[in-house]
Image 1 (cartoon, rainbow, N blue to C red):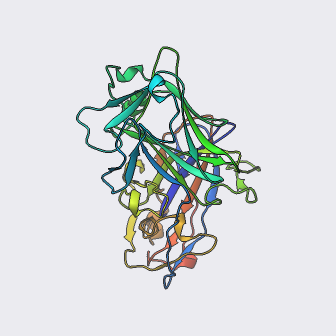
Image 2 (cartoon, one colour):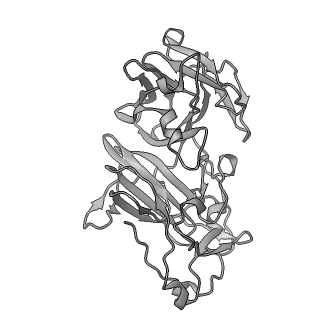
Image 3 (tube, rainbow, N blue to C red):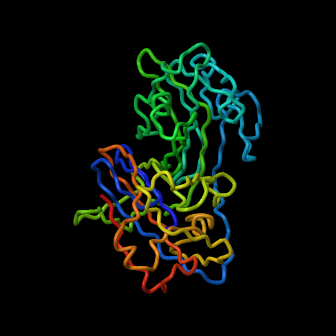
Amino acid sequence: MNGDDCISSHAPASQKISDMSINSIRPFAFCLSFLPLLISMAADTISPYSPTNYFLLDCGSSSNTTLSSDGRTWRGDSASKFSSSNTQNVSLESTAASVEQVPYMTARIFTSQFTYTFPVSAGPKFVRFYFYPAAYSGIHESDFFFNVTSGVYTVMSNFSASLTVAAMEPQVASIVKEFIIHVWENQTLNITFSPSPSFYAFMNGIELCSMPNNLYISDSEPIPLVATNYLFYIDIYTALETVYRLNVDGASFGGERETGMFRTWQQDSSYIFGAASGLTLQGNNTDIRYTRATPAHTAPTAVDSSCRSMGPIPDINLNYNLTWIFPVDSGFYYLVRLHFCEIGNVGTPPSENMWHAILQ
């Protein structure tokens, strides 16, 4: 196993995405997608994906350009063409104490409904929301509860960044919520923040990035719904939320090291159940040939060049399972994408590398 995506959907048809093999601790439904096998051979030319739309909005900032630690340029929203015309009437600019990382240094506080409007081309988009829960403009972090909508999709409902971050393990100070939303021809992408009654809304940063049409969504290729006889269609009417995206036996990374979509990949070790973590293999010097079915932007070479194996000795590998455990929310469908690549000798020829992938 090289990598895994796990994604869930949202209204009007809700699914979530995850890249990896998953054992869950709550009941839910899985849609399983295997990415075609990649063979280690002489490398083709690898071209990263070039997004047709890419915006980085530093909310609450009046600066025209600000560089983040990964070298990307963020633009302040104070006089932005993407902001509502009544910005000063329904929002406040604020700063976070003791924070030196863009876009978390500033925030926009919403006292009533507020909409950002992005002129974009048709097709699916990654939309990422950056939250650093803190006290802003004298408002305690527990006083921020709000909804976030985009067109017909409600992507966050009565959301509290403070409670979400407090419940995360290991502990973190900030969170990025990533969604995939389809935009129709001759439409703009509207993102609306609506404070819950007697509460406020806030936002530190918004990232919007185009993506290839068939990376996660395809009208023509249904996906088997695990443990049923049904096929599941993830079409352009479905919005997705990324839940987990793991780099198996590799380091966490994202930003400029990605394939043009700036996705973040996390290390998988904290999700492995028990002490059975398998054998690890790094193929750093391996040339990988990608195919039309699995183009180079599907996953970075950093994901395809590391893996975990259960080893070549039957007396050992038949007596244990290599298991990842993921906490999830019930009531959603989950798309699980498993990435495989033959990157080197794991003790058996490729034709004898056979196993069961179990999701439950």
